[in-house]
Image (cartoon, rainbow, N blue to C red; front, side, top):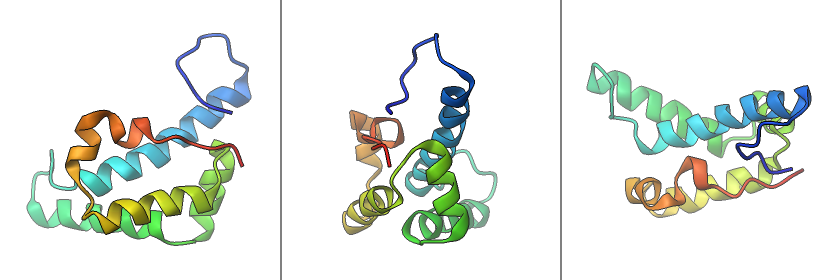
Length: 106
């Protein structure tokens, strides 16, 4: 299932969209850790937490992916690709950021 902006969805699609937003926010935080933060140390911590969550295989990560209808291995692989490129902010601004990740059904 791919979540788009269509208006005629049942409840489960809306719920999946909410959990998809959690995954997307983690990617945004991992890329833009310093943007909008009041203190650099807080931003660095939030960025590190997001990266650790995306790269790990924790229970909460697997649950969130399942609720979003995503394959955790795919999401982790995408995080690893971004990590290998130094978590480039340019991907986010070129349409390849969190919202442009091709999310795959599990």
